[in-house]
Amino acid sequence: MFATTFSHQNSAALPPDLFTAIAELKRELNAVVLAHYYQDPDIQDIADYIGDSLGLSQQAASTEAEVIVFAGVHFMAETAKILNPHKLVLLPDLNAGCSLADSCPPAAFAQFKAAHPNHKVISYINCTAEIKAMSDIICTSSNAVNIVRQIPADQPIIFAPDRNLGRYVMEQTGRDMVLWQGSCIVHETFSEKKLVQLQIAHPEAEIIAHPECEPSVLRHANYIGSTTALLNYSQRSSRSSFIVATEPGIIHQMQKQAPNKLFIPAPPMNDCPCNECPHMRLNTLEKLYWAMKNKNS
Ligand code: 13P
Ligand code: SF4
Image 1 (cartoon, rainbow, N blue to C red):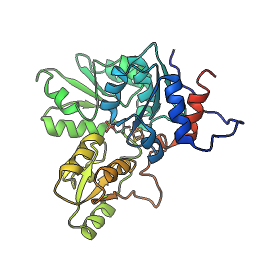
Image 2 (cartoon, rainbow, N blue to C red; image 1 turned 180 degrees about the vertical axis):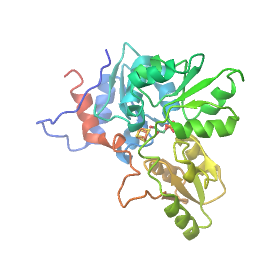
Image 3 (cartoon, helix red, strand yellow; image 1 turned 180 degrees about the horizontal axis):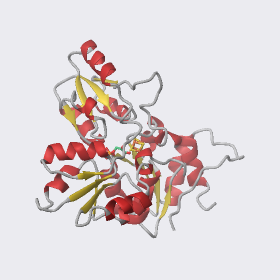
């Protein structure tokens, strides 16, 4: 069974020092905390491993811990459970979904697949278990280009669910693919106009972007890559300032690893914090604590 725990309103008082309390629970439960870069800084700071979807799946596959606390979204915890069917996987807030995964409903995708016989289906890991079950290969933003390059040239491909990542992979590989037209609410929110204005104000800054962004943003990017690739690039680049076109949670790690560099979040279209993923940000340190504390409820 897919064992997530929803952290409900708890009448018991929170311990005064959540960091210490979570560290104690980790020891007691033999638990590992895996966190995506888009989590709140506090959660990143208590995590045993912070990474992108590929790194997190690899950690989930290799951990010897008995309990996996997955600070990320539902499809990530679900993937960890698929890789560890006999372990308990806790998601601090069971409502932490994903607009991109939701943009690919299984029934509609089954029809789409049936309309394209002889196609191999490559699905981005940001999809539900039902879509994964209909796929031949699962990729992440880190390895999508390499995977598509390995498919024989005469093999037609469906790529799902993210049309922006799919389009980017097509450009990089020169392969034609049939794209499912899904997208991520966070990465489609960046404003090209405001990005260009920001670049004029910071001419020394490099623009670094996640491939889930729209082409109108990607065309201004000096570097495009998965969250881990963006983090690594920002550390090794000789530049000292960056405009970051992805969820700004990752800036916590960028800043920690390069305290003297400047990281500016790319601006969304509206005056809202909508470049923050509303799903990822449902997880909090408090909910993570309660999920561990009440793991059997
Ligand atoms: P990566 O973790 O593969 O960079 O993907 C970003 C993302 O949107 C995760 O939800
Ligand atoms: Fe899904 Fe986008 Fe949030 Fe990632 S950032 S979890 S793709 S909605």
